[in-house]
Image 1 (cartoon, rainbow, N blue to C red):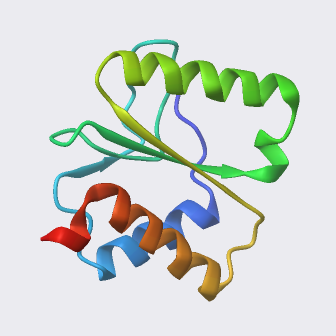
Image 2 (cartoon, helix red, strand yellow):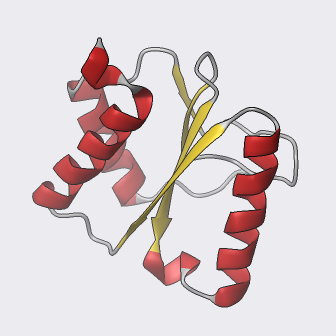
Length: 110
């Protein structure tokens, strides 16, 4: 089980790299709970980020699954950030997402 990496995920990875936020990060790392693979995760910080394209994550069924996974991860000590977006990502939206992740990681405090 390995998901296709979206253009948005590739663009975000490049932007996170440029912002110096990839230290300790792994991508597409399976976390065995209910077969979930976060788009980006920092194992040492136990933080997972999901980039949720609205075309794939807007159905009620998918939103219920996303919420169930968030709860399961949090019960295991993970912090989860789900970021909905409408592809393709604009530069402005990409920078907004990088800022959200930077804040989520506490990188503003370092």
